[in-house]
Image (cartoon, rainbow, N blue to C red; front, side):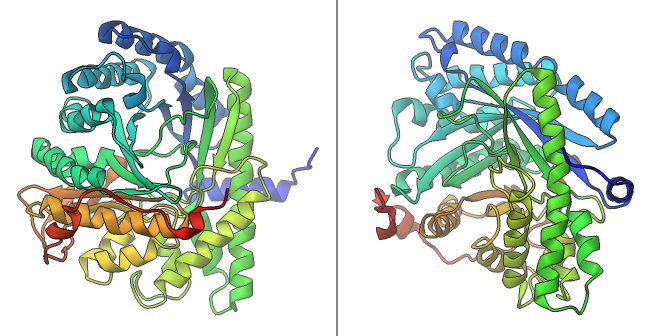
Length: 456
């Protein structure tokens, strides 16, 4: 058994009190396959019953552990089996799927979580009738619920990119923006398009309970951008070896706290502990920023030359430090770069230091992709599909998870601001290349997987 020294206790307390260290989320994944039936009302009853039975103590246990250990556990969430699969027998119309979305929302409110993920479809290679209905239902589902999050997986390194699905998602993002335009198109903040999604991702909006998972599992996401920022600032002017060692050691300390919380939550809830996600996830709070870490490495502003290299260092050292502190590292594990959820990132975008093109370059080395980016409301659906296609290609070729969560804010343009509130923050409307890609994205079919996919 490891001995914890008094100095480590003091150091941890300082991280929590002054550097925004927290456990960002405990997410309970729930398998809904045994809820399946050919009657949509009975299916909804089964879903509500199972979620409220398994997750009834999730919030209270999370709060208890947070108080006892002195570690803030910010979010408690639920993810479920992709609903396109669960509803495949019962749902004959998109309205049937919306019924399920409302059931998920009602269950989330009953158990007290702040988001529920899994209103999802996996269409990397083909689209079933149920997949299509769920995708078409997304604008209605997200406009008529408060806590439901949706993700659609359109590509992978093994099978390529389903361009029919990519083109469809360009339209769906635009329709979701239109139907929630009274709230700065906030519906799009709960909708993400993936390549190579992780089955055990605890973070929203992309969390779903993978079909290879067990009946229920607890996945924990730990985060400490403020802790890493403070550590980096202490080694200003030192060489890269010192910088990397500092980040790695700091990630180790942060991860140990998440491991402790995850194991204890598993014991109290009687649900197996799944993985610990090491991702550094920012918030709009001052001092809780990925951009501040990168600027602490020596960049005048995030987006300056050297930004991609700095982010690559951060991502790699976080992984190296984290895997030494936990036997079960998974999810996405690295650094997120959402614009609206990171005050310094949003500031850099507003002043022009950070562009959409530079963000795309950074996604080659970060945890996910183009995340929480507000774009002009008059951006064409085909242009959004082109943005999605580019990001999916980065994920497919580099064998990594990439995602797109862009928000075309209806009625606003470059120079305006979008306000989402709370954890979602606010962001300047970023300019988008207006040259057309219609002929390209309208081709249809599938972009083949790269040659390195043939490893079996």
